[in-house]
Image 1 (cartoon, rainbow, N blue to C red):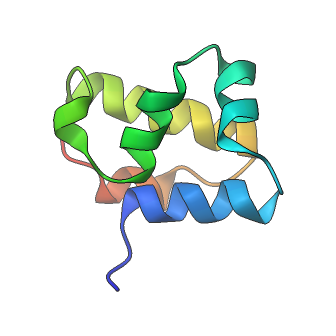
Image 2: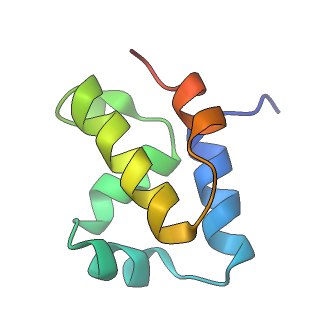
Length: 75
Protein backbone atom coordinates (compact mmCIF):
# COMPACT_ATOMS: atom_id res chain seq x y z
CA UNK A 1 0.00 0.00 0.00
CA UNK A 2 1.28 3.49 -0.77
CA UNK A 3 2.44 5.59 2.17
CA UNK A 4 -0.06 8.36 2.91
CA UNK A 5 -0.12 11.24 5.38
CA UNK A 6 -3.05 9.67 7.21
CA UNK A 7 -1.34 6.30 7.34
CA UNK A 8 1.80 7.82 8.84
CA UNK A 9 -0.25 9.67 11.46
CA UNK A 10 -2.14 6.50 12.37
CA UNK A 11 1.11 4.50 12.63
CA UNK A 12 2.65 7.16 14.88
CA UNK A 13 -0.42 7.19 17.15
CA UNK A 14 -0.67 3.41 17.32
CA UNK A 15 3.07 3.07 17.99
CA UNK A 16 2.48 5.06 21.18
CA UNK A 17 -0.49 2.90 22.15
CA UNK A 18 -2.80 5.91 22.05
CA UNK A 19 -6.48 5.40 21.24
CA UNK A 20 -7.89 7.87 18.69
CA UNK A 21 -10.52 9.02 21.23
CA UNK A 22 -7.80 9.78 23.79
CA UNK A 23 -5.87 11.84 21.23
CA UNK A 24 -9.05 13.65 20.17
CA UNK A 25 -9.82 14.50 23.81
CA UNK A 26 -6.28 15.72 24.43
CA UNK A 27 -6.41 17.96 21.33
CA UNK A 28 -10.05 18.99 21.91
CA UNK A 29 -10.91 17.90 18.35
CA UNK A 30 -13.88 15.73 17.31
CA UNK A 31 -12.92 12.08 16.81
CA UNK A 32 -14.48 12.13 13.32
CA UNK A 33 -12.04 14.85 12.22
CA UNK A 34 -9.06 12.76 13.35
CA UNK A 35 -10.57 9.70 11.67
CA UNK A 36 -10.98 11.66 8.43
CA UNK A 37 -7.35 12.81 8.69
CA UNK A 38 -6.03 9.28 9.33
CA UNK A 39 -8.11 7.89 6.44
CA UNK A 40 -6.97 10.61 3.99
CA UNK A 41 -10.56 11.77 3.53
CA UNK A 42 -9.70 15.41 2.89
CA UNK A 43 -13.24 16.10 1.60
CA UNK A 44 -14.55 15.53 5.15
CA UNK A 45 -12.33 18.30 6.56
CA UNK A 46 -13.06 22.04 6.22
CA UNK A 47 -10.13 22.97 3.94
CA UNK A 48 -6.44 22.34 3.21
CA UNK A 49 -5.28 24.94 5.75
CA UNK A 50 -7.28 23.26 8.53
CA UNK A 51 -6.06 19.82 7.43
CA UNK A 52 -2.40 20.89 7.53
CA UNK A 53 -2.81 22.64 10.89
CA UNK A 54 -4.53 19.59 12.40
CA UNK A 55 -1.79 17.30 11.07
CA UNK A 56 0.88 19.55 12.59
CA UNK A 57 -0.95 19.59 15.92
CA UNK A 58 -1.20 15.79 15.91
CA UNK A 59 2.52 15.51 15.10
CA UNK A 60 3.37 17.86 17.97
CA UNK A 61 1.20 15.84 20.37
CA UNK A 62 2.84 12.60 19.22
CA UNK A 63 6.32 14.18 19.22
CA UNK A 64 6.88 13.08 15.63
CA UNK A 65 8.44 14.96 12.71
CA UNK A 66 5.71 16.79 10.79
CA UNK A 67 7.77 17.41 7.61
CA UNK A 68 7.26 14.03 5.87
CA UNK A 69 3.55 14.07 6.71
CA UNK A 70 2.99 17.65 5.57
CA UNK A 71 4.81 16.84 2.32
CA UNK A 72 2.09 14.26 1.56
CA UNK A 73 -0.86 16.53 2.34
CA UNK A 74 -2.78 18.58 -0.22
CA UNK A 75 -1.55 22.16 -0.47
